[in-house]
Length: 475
Image 1 (cartoon, rainbow, N blue to C red):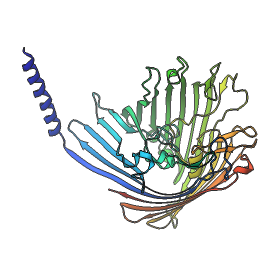
Image 2: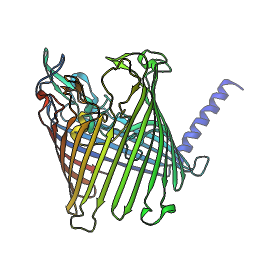
Image 3: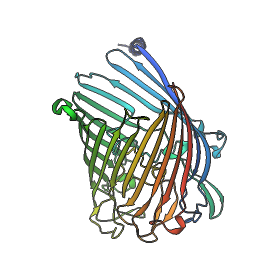
Image 4: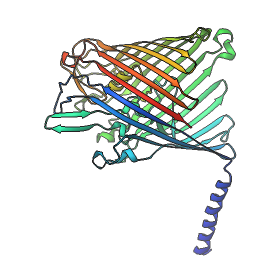
């Protein structure tokens, strides 16, 4: 057969497949949302006293931010669906700013996945591509860079520096406000109602140096509804068990065979022992190998991970009471590691936040990683009118492992603060009002106030506070 004939047949095949794919589209839906944020923050804890080469003189900011997302869902025949969502996060008035960095104007791919229902087997749904993953309360899986951070391609991750010499002003990021939550993953969902099993493989970071330099995630999550078995008041009981593995190849650090690995097992229970009362508890343990670091250098021996976390909450809703109030009391624990004897330690006990998507205090979430802490919280809400919701949250924080005197803690926003040998970390109060203007338009106003505890040096004792207003339109 001549090469020309082969080329013609190949071209005919490609055109035929393309035409067939176009003809199979049954339904297309366009949706999205636009969120406008007005941000006033003063989150620097160091009271103008910097640490190190760059002094953080102030962390005050007044910004306007718009987050725009456009989503297209297409239904094809034979249970095939596709989803694409584009996102733009931008500071107002910065299109020609930032020394040539045009991320404010960039439109990025937020979601891009294919869903195959009843794939080869009736209970099986396969999802392939850039997708959101969230399990339980997202204590483990929910955000690929955690709720308090975002990839540097987002303008919200920027930290600009101005000034001369060592007297610089840092305008820190708003990474915690980003809407980017997608993983590049393959997900197999097996629905054996009331049992649902998810099997996931995700690539968190592709580093291209060698084969063994990537950050990868693998896991299985099983969710079982006990309603059909228990009945009665416990009919809404759900139990969940999971295993996750995060693997970071040693070549990533130019150190072959010195991988960083987390193996995690955990379980979760949600039940309603009486009407309008919801109780939930979750616990997990991390084991595996940790890189033993002092100033970024891998030392021997490589310690074993031995960390754990737990969360519990009790919620009581009163739908038949005036203003329909709701109250939640919660406690969370994330283990820490003793900073002494780092060089020769056998175990590494600090909880790794993994890919959490939680928020215990808006300011605390923006400042501190979800580790080495005890958290006690009280959350309440009420609706004085049908379209108005008022919320109040109070959180109290203690460190699990005490810092050494004069040890420097670097926050998620890049502030360096001096610590004392004390467990009291501080408290936060968040007040929020939400107004549902229409079914598609919502306004909100948040005020947050964080008071540092006695574990912070006197020079880092100033109060952090914020005021954030937002308008969200969904279409």
